[in-house]
Length: 101
Image (cartoon, rainbow, N blue to C red; front, side, top):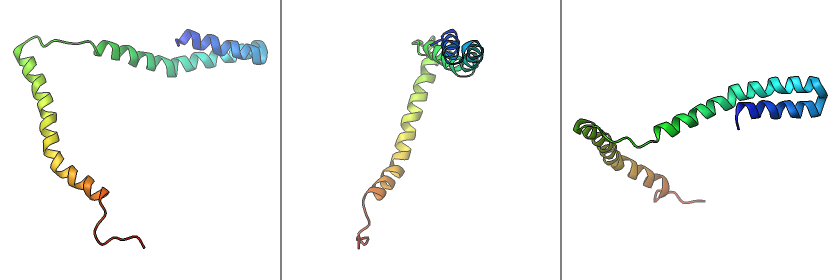
């Protein structure tokens, strides 16, 4: 839905509900809604479509940089896993002395 469609829909609903004054109020409300809510959403959506394009590395150094980014996440996962797994297991498995009364 675009800003124009939002404004037109709100103006139409306002005109049906309250006549010409309702159309004016509906047009103002629709324009504000389109400006405040719909425009940022459309901008984010258009930006995501541009960012999602596949970019090939242009040099060896760019490729090496991308590989170290991915490897950094994997190293971080291997460093955190020994701490997180016992924590999760301790939350899921009850202690031996804790019986429900």
